Image 1 (cartoon, helix red, strand yellow):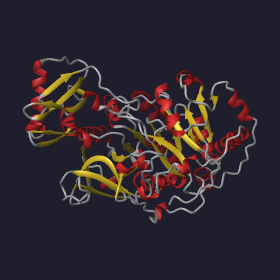
Image 2 (cartoon, one colour; image 1 turned 30 degrees about the horizontal axis):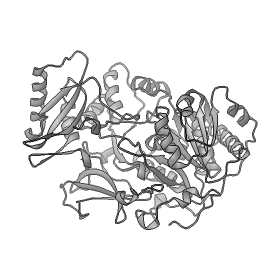
Image 3 (tube, one colour; image 1 turned 45 degrees about the horizontal axis):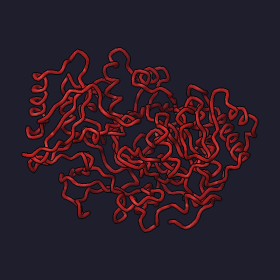
Image 4 (tube, helix red, strand yellow; image 1 turned 135 degrees about the vertical axis):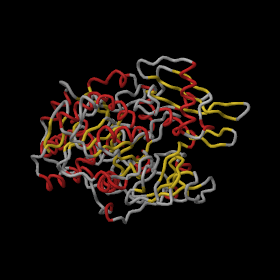
Length: 530
C-alpha cells in the first residue's frame, strides 16, 4: 500500500491518507493487473504505436491534427523542456486550457517526467484557482494565452507560470527541444494526477490517482462497456480537466489507437455538426446535451454513432427513450465519481435496461447498505458502496474517513438493486425529500415533469413545510412559445400525478428563466433549497 515512491519531490507521497483509511482495492482482475513499474504515458504512446503504427491520427483539434508519432515527439519535446526548467518527478504542474492537442501533449509530458498533473478549467475564477493552488501546492503552471486574466488574479501562487499557445515563447522553446526522451521509471503506485472535486458545496477535495489508475479505467469500463477499436472516432463535450472527459476523450481512445476529436467549443449544436463532419462513432456527454440535441436531429442525423455514453448527472428515462427513438442508439448510462476516477456501474448493448444505471463494471463490486452499513434487501433504498481497482485517496483531507468505510467507497448516492443485479439511481443522499413520512426522490419528479412538452429544464428540491415536514418544490424552465400561468402550473401538477404516485407531485411550482449550475453544467439543487 503506502510504502515507497520513485518521485524526488515527495509531497504527494507524504500527503497520501493513512493506508488504514484506504478502500480495499481489487488488483487481481485480469483486465486491470499491472507490473510494479509503469509510466502511463508510455502505455498510451509507445505501446499504442506498436499496435497501430505511428502514422495513425491520434488527435484532431483546433490547434493541430497529430498522428501518434507526432504526438510522441511533441510530448518528448515538452518533457525535455520541463527538465530544462528544473521540473523534477513529484512536482505539481497546473494546466489551464480548453480541450485541444497542446493540452493533451502537456498532460502526457507531465506524466512522462514523473510529475503530477493538476488540471483546471477555463471557467474557474481566481478564488477557485487559489484553493487548488493551496491544496496541491502547485509549483508550475501552464496557462493558455487566452485564459491569463483570472490566473493573474491568483494571489497565492509563488511558482513559475508559462503562457502557452498562440505566439508564446513556450511553444518556440519547446520546438527547439529533442524529440527523444526516456520516460521516468515510475512505480505503478506513484501519483500521476490530482483530480479536484467541483467544490460546489464547500472546500474542494483533491483526489489522488496513480499511474495504474489511468490505465485501469480504460481496461475496465472502456474495454468492457464502450468496447472501442482503433477504427473508432471519439468526441464529446466534457472538459478533459474533469475525469469524465479525461477518460472519454484522451485515455480511452489513446489506449486502443483510436482518434479523438477535441472541441474547444462543444455547445450541443456545434457538437452535433462535428459528429457529422468527423464521422464520430463514440460520443461522451451529459444528459443535458443529449436533450438539447434532440430538436436538431430532424435536420441532422449523426448516422455514424455506435456508442453514446451519458454520465455526469442522472439520466432521465424520458431522455433515454427520446434519444433511442430519434437515433436508434441505446444511451449507455453510467455512474462514476472523481474519487474513483471514472465510471464503475454501467451496461451496454443487450445488457442495457432503460431506467437502470446497470451492473458493476468488470473489476468492480457494488452493494446497497443502510445507515448501519448493513446490506439492504433487493428493491430497498440505501447508500451505494463500491470497490474496485480505483478508489478514494484524498490529499491530506479529513473527509477521507467519511467517504471510505469498511474498505468500501461511499459515493453519497441513494440506489436500489433489483433481483437481477441491476442498480437503479434514486437520488443523491441529500436530494431525498421526506414528506409526510414518504421518501420522494427529486430526480423521479424531475423525470416526470420532463415528459411534458412544455418543460425544457427542471430542478426539484425539498422545501420546509409546517404540516408535512417538507414538500416537493419544482423550478421549471419553459420551452419557447410557452408562458407561465396558474393554469399551466395546475396542468403540470396534474401531469406529475398521472405519471408517478400522486403524493410525489410538486405542491410548490415556480417558473424561472434559468437554473443554477456548476461550471461543468451540473445542476446545483442546494442553491434552490430554502
